[in-house]
Length: 440
Image (cartoon, rainbow, N blue to C red; front, side, top):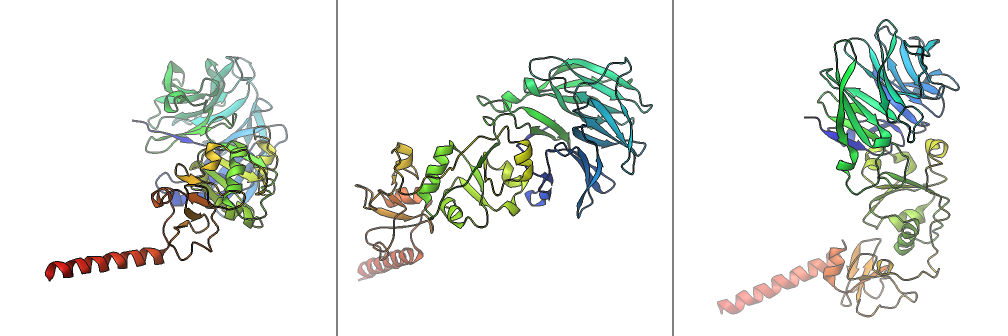
């Protein structure tokens, strides 16, 4: 049985082990639209569509292996002859590269003399040949195709009438070719014949079935590991789909306050889990966000694919956004002005903003007085709460108020250790007294 995994928008090229998250490693944090990675001769080859290059990583550093202006590379693959082929999406060719990175004559047409349209991705077979997808012009047009490059260099069209053909991959036994139709939000499959033709086209998976009642995922690349587990990459076409990226001018937070951070997220329409990338000089913002349970704070140098995949939103300020996001995702990023609202700004009260930690909580009032019915003070920095009987009650500035201790604990707050110890000691003393009375 083939298992399917969904991978959200990647911000950097990574090596990953499905077995252990600790194996995830960023190898290029400034890749401009990295695609089509392939491991070959102990090196990682991949393309940067935004730079028009094929890059190579030797385990220590990245270098440009080949570059061609106007190519628009989207995938690279070594051949059985020791050369490389590259899909030139923009100029509609299959580029050829020598083993030492020199440009060779490209493939321009199939055996019928017809040009390709939007070459996109490769899938090698066990006979030394290579399948590749031609995406077509996209949109509503059913004009995409699939091709096969034989060992003799011939290029035959093996499937037509596809809808925005994108990534493709062979099954491990070589009997099935899986192909992504991005516009239809699905993966189809073909039986592979002995002459490398394709037959019995059928739907393998509809992404809407994995994410019912959600916006389209827009599947893009597709890979399969040696265990037969399938990995599906998301195309970042819509910020309504899982894996949303927002770039803001700045947070504008001068004084650490959780309330301000919450208002900023509300203003951006962020719900669910969020990875907030904060610059080293933005300590006030980091302190403001760190006590929000649904937010993970990370520095720009710590950005990694695992944390990206674990969050529904990724939020940058302009000063820390990777170059690849600026250059290649600018048209997809949600425009946002300065997101934060100053602590003394007038905010229209809503049920959510007045109850920042859910039912039983209350946001601080403008004059920092106790909201009626909410006597418990909560400190968002320490995640501790203090009741009126606490020795620290008077000196605690409440960043949130709770109606009861139970509500505070439900929100993740706890009593100071000294208070807990005193209560436990009192309970033990009471129990001892009771035992003494029973024994008398």
